[in-house]
Image 1: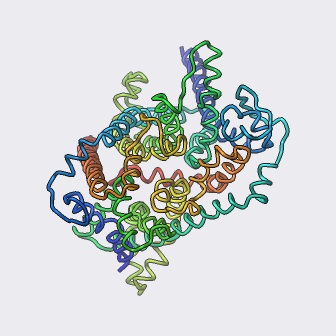
Image 2: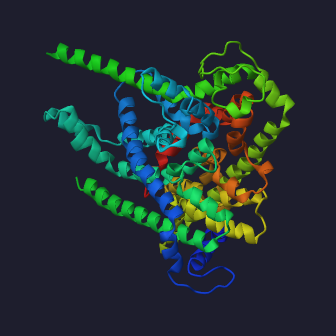
Length: 277
Length: 298
C-alpha cells in the first residue's frame, strides 16, 4: 500500500520503458520491427563517434576518479589532524558542492580563455600560452572543475568513516611502536577500505555526469578531446536513432552492473575480513 | 626528549593549518570572484574582460583593454548589473522562475513518495521486498546515459515532452530518497512500533505519528541533496525541452555569458543565492545526509 506510488512510478518511468530499450536494441528500427540480432551492438561498437566518446569519458574517469578519492581522503585527514578552525575549513571545502556549476563557468572562462588570466601568468614566465578550452588541455580544466565540485563530498564520506576507526586499535599500535605511516597504512587504511570502495564507485558515477561541466564551459560542440558519452547520446537523440540510442544505453548499463557487482563482492570480502578481528 | 617531540608537532600543525587554509581559499576563490565581480558596472566588466568575450563587446563603444584584468575588488561598487537584471530585463527573472518551478515540486513530491515507500519497505519483510529494494539501489546508481533513454520514450508516448511534466515525473519517482530514508527507517527499533500497535495505534498513526517524526532529520538531509542535484541540472531540460524559453537558468547562464557579460556575474550570483542560503542553515543536515550514504548495504 505505502509502496504503491513509488513502485508504480518506477515501473512506468524506468523499468517498463527499459524493457522497450532492450527490445529496440535488437530490431532494425522501431517501425519495421525486424529482428536483427546483435547487428546494432556491432554497429555501435564500430561507430567512430561512440568510440571517441567512450575513450574520452574513460580517460577522464581514469584520471579524475583516483584523484577525487585520494585528494578527498587527504582533505579528511587534514581536517582530522587537530588543526584549528576545523568547522570553518570544512564549510569552505563543502561550499562548492552547493554552488551550481553554471554560476561558476564564467569565472573559469576568464581564467582559462586563450586571452585569460592563467595564460597571462604562463606568458610572464616566458612559456607559450595554451588554448585551454579548445585543445586537449581542456581535459585538465574539466578535471579541476570536477575536483573542485566533488572533493568536499568525498571528504565528508571519509570523515564519517574515520569516526568509526576504533581508538584503542590505534593506541595499541602506537604503544607497539608503530610510526605514523605504519598506523596510517596498516590500521587506518584498513578500516577505511570499504569507504574507499564506496567513494570510488560514487566518483565513477559522478564522472559519467561530467558532460554538464563540458557543456556549460564549451557549449554543444566541444573540442574533440572533450566529446563525452552524453554528447554522443544527445546527438543520437537529435537524430532520433532509437536503436543506436538503446544499444548505447544497454552497453552503459552493462558496464555499470559490472562495476556495482564488483563493489558488492569486494564489500562482502572486506566486511567479513574486518568482522573477524 | 618530550619537549623535542612537542616542538615537532607544533611545527607540523602550523604547516598543516597553512596548507588547509590555502586550499580552502582556493576552493572559495571562484565563488568570491563571481560575487565581487557582480558589483562591477557593465563598462568595467567589458574593459576588464573585453579580450575574452570579444564577440560580446565588439560592436559596443566601450574601451577594451588588450589584456585581461582579473580583479577581486571592483573599482567602484555598482549595483547596475542587479538593477538591470531585476528590473530592466525580465528575461532572467523568468528563467530563475523556471528553475524554481522545475525544482521545488520535485523536491517536495520525491520526498512524499519516498517517505511512503520507505515505510513500505520497512514494513514488508521477505525476499521479494529485498530484491525490489536492491533493484532500487541499482537504478539509483545508473548514470543519465542509461536512465534518460527510457524516460524519453515514455514521455514521448505520453506526449509530455516539452512540458514541465517531463522533468517533474522522472524526478519525483527517482529512487534516491527512497533508498536513503529506508536505510534510516529500518533502524527504528521494532519494539517501539510494536508497542504503539498494541496500544491500539492504526497503521497510519504508526506511520505519521512515530516514523515520520523520527525521520525528520534525514528527510531534511534528503531535501537538501535533491535540491542541489536538480538546481544544478542540465541534461534533462536539454533533452526534454525543445522550447528554449522553458530552460532553467542553469542552461541559460552558459548562453548569456557570451552575449551579455555585463550582467552575467549578477545572474550567476543570483542563481547561487538559494543554495548558499540552504547551506548556511542546513550544513549539518547536509553533512549527515552525505555521511549516511556511506556504505550502500548499511
